Length: 346
Ligand code: PHE
Image (cartoon, rainbow, N blue to C red; front, side, top):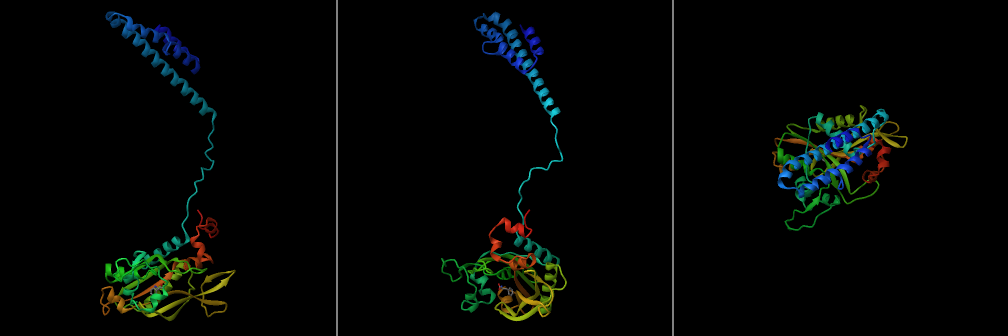
């Protein structure tokens, strides 16, 4: 029985014939299965001699069937591969990828420009306390400038008079950086800031980059050179013309507001040239000044030894100017069509 079974299995023409043989020998009603059942009725001596023979036949048949089946499967696969052609020039599946948001892009560009000028990147919390956001920046509780900031306050739970708030500017990072690192120091601090204000040119959350240099003998000339150098690099043109106007910030003295020359070209503002030239205008770009000695003092440094300048510039405004957007609110809509219109899609 064993030999004929093995011969027939070897001769099976295809997978179907093989399956029929499996049923015939090893199925519930199969002839080898039937032999196995006879073992129960044998005497122990008979079982000793017959048992291994029957088991051997079963194992041999099962192994032969498995081997033959594998051969059939392989042959089928080979046949399939032989008829199939693979076009390796077809494009791969398109996986949609995200893209960098213009605000992130500009913050990266600025970090790179300032890194070349020796500035490190500093950060501070968006949920800030009154002391860092106002008091240490020379805005005492009764200072009118506090009211001008449209501040989002949290409830004063512990009643210690140092309320938590959403920072209204990146200037508190000046204090944190000076306290943490002392002087000399050269940092920029990019991040989100919040003011309760909303129209086409104001959103309740927007982005600033703070700049701070504290060292020996720092003067306004250093500030002007730094701003000119960074704006030339950022706008990738040499004809950047700045106008410095006297201004007021509690944390700088003197304070300087900086305008940049631009002209209107096919519906968008193009930075460059002097606002006093034909067809040019001035646009307010940023606030800056020499760090007020009271601020240096409150940050724990000796104002007779250390002087510095600081500036704060709106990142969203810088992005709009470079990439030609006109509505600030669109920055925060997350509309893919808007992003791709300005070349920011993947
Ligand atoms: N913090 C000021 C603002 O948000 C900008 C500023 C920064 C001005 C640093 C002077 C120095 O308007």
